[in-house]
Amino acid sequence: MSSTPHTPHTPHTVRTTDYHTAGEPFRIVDQDLPPIPGDTVAERRALAPRVGPLDELRRLLVREPRGHSGMYGGFVVPPDDDGAHFGVLFWHKDGYSTACGHGTMALGAWAVDTGRVPAPDDGDASVRVDVPSGRVTATVHRAGGRTTGVTFRNVPTRILARKVPVTTGYGTVEADLAHSGARYVSVAARDLGLDTTTASLPGLVRAGREIRAALPEHDVYGVILYEDLPDTPSGPRQRNVTVFADGQIDRSPCGSGTSARLALLAEDGRLAPGDTLLHESVVGTVFTGRLLPEGITEVTGRTHRTGTHTFVLDPHDDLGTGFLL
Image (cartoon, rainbow, N blue to C red; front, side, top):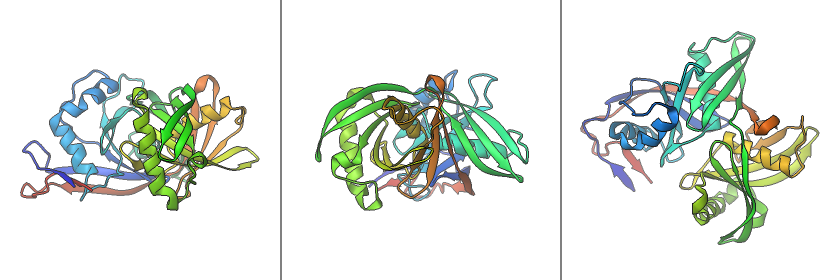
């Protein structure tokens, strides 16, 4: 167990709005933050770990007893320019990521729910967000005055390498690499002798850690361990477990990871123009994805608010900003 004591710079009260997108949590912080140097979201992300009070705030919200090792969230920051509604710094237990599809979808719903971006009772509203990997869009779908889904349009996806041999404790497997805002490795779970069920999670996490560690030169963020399911009339269907950071499991089908899968399936000839990928998670939630020209992808799913919170840090709390098991 690791824990971090409180320092006088840590805010005593922190307000958040929490969502889940297809089961994966996202904790939104929209309040005054410690000054973060940098002129763009990408620059602020690179410098954020050096801003002690900000990183203490991240630890406070992601660690137990207020969070957990799989918690995800974002600090709302100014956009790069007037072309976006706002920017965001994505964070998890190990630091700050360059992309987060499920978080972008949650932010789109939040922006509409709070009135930050106007939206019709029936129809769509586009929420433009500057993230470290570029400018992305969350199209919020509305009917009868409520949000029924969100479509995340990602930055272009680039395929980096195919059939890279990787040695694991389960044998040598072939890995495909793609960059879709962050770098993802795709490996067929069956090549590891595993499936993508909850019973296999310990083995999948072990394999994900081994694969990531075997590719240090590629700066891998997430390892997508996928399983083919019967195709639908609209296109391929897969289930995956995405292992990100240091062995954390994405409960959703992974938004940015779905972008990576779309590009790879298209190159394999399994996803034609107009087709959709039905992408399932280990908990049974679903994203649908489609590939547009020039490597642009769109991923659609559902996101729901789970709560609004005021977290308090008692200055006499010996656990400080919390612990991780």
